[in-house]
Every structure is written in C-alpha cells, then in structure tokens.
Image (cartoon, rainbow, N blue to C red; front, side, top):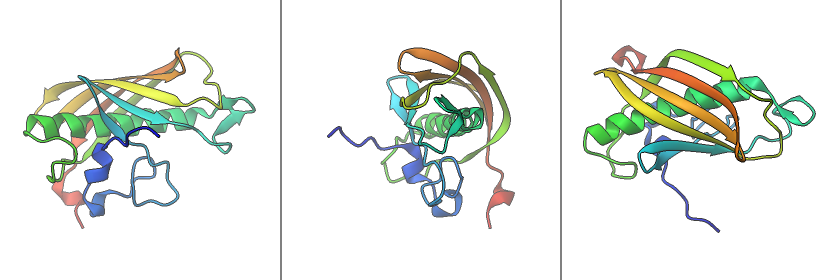
Length: 158
C-alpha cells in the first residue's frame, strides 16, 4: 500500500470541516484531500458509479466541485506555508471560502479513471489567493479552472 499523505483538510478545525466537497466530518460528502507535491498542489479523486452524466462519463458538477475545493484547499496550504507551517504541524490552518469559480470543460471526462487536479497558487491580496487548476483523467487534460479563494470571514464562526 502507498503512503498516506497528510492533506490540509485533515487539519481543518472541526467547526469548519463539514463542506460537502472536502469536509472530513461530512459522512455523505466527497472527502476531497489537497496536499503539496513540490511547488504545486494536488487532489486525487476516483468518482464512483453515482457521479455519471451519461454512462462512461463523469458529471460536470463533480468536476466543478473538485476544482472549487481544490482551490480553497490550495489557498489554505499556501497561506499556512507562508505563516511558517505545513500540514500535520499541529497548527490549525486558515480556512477559505470561494470568491469566484470558473471552469472550462476541455474534453469529456471518462468515468472509471482516478482524476488528478494539479494547482498553481498565486497570492493576489493578503486575504485573496488565485488558484489555477488542471483536471486530468490519466494523462488526458479534461478541464481547467480558476478559483479566487478568500480568507473565511470571522462572521462564519458559530
């Protein structure tokens, strides 16, 4: 078996770990996990039989969700690193919300193949980060996306 990678979502505070896409505490969610691979971020996810648009192809909404959560997770990784921490350090990372989401579907995404999202993160403001993502099914680039991620406002705390 491969090594388990520590993802940023593993460290989100319990109050903010309920997202349908990436919340580890949402038992019905996707449980996307985002981590560093060198200077890029990655998320790998294998859609199940419920995630089809038509037989043989992945539903585009799943692709949008994957890019969305990968973007906010990547921003959290980047700001956490800027603050001097890495996933698993014991420090709770910052949490982000989506300011904007843009997805370009380039090719139909085949079902039955693990999807890999590769992200590049750029700080554009102390509280905003831009994440450019590419979604691959095997070696095939199927979608590209951009997320503007915003540090979660304090008013979101309960």
